[in-house]
Image (cartoon, rainbow, N blue to C red; front, top):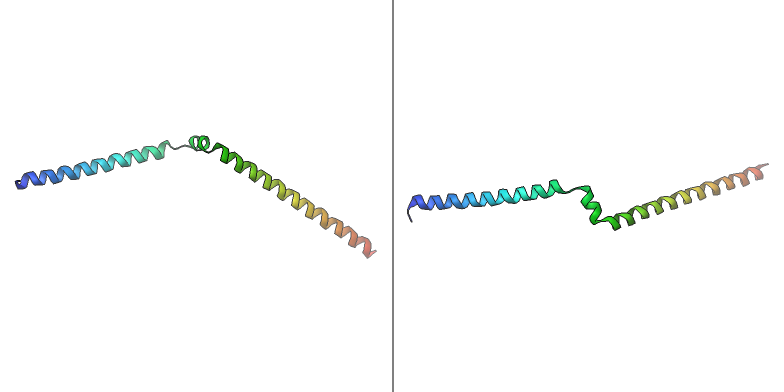
Length: 85
């Protein structure tokens, strides 16, 4: 094989590798751009719903616990105030 043809084949193979890498990058970029919150919500709808319900339950239990502690503290203060007199 003459030197000129060998160089052309090397350049062609480098060009094809570069082209295929560019195509793969563009495909990946399209996937990232096309990713939206709506598609994520549609695919994970039930797990997101369970997560939101779980967080609401934890928030409710936290408020209930805090209220119980406040009421308990106030009752204790009333008892101590009555005992002081």
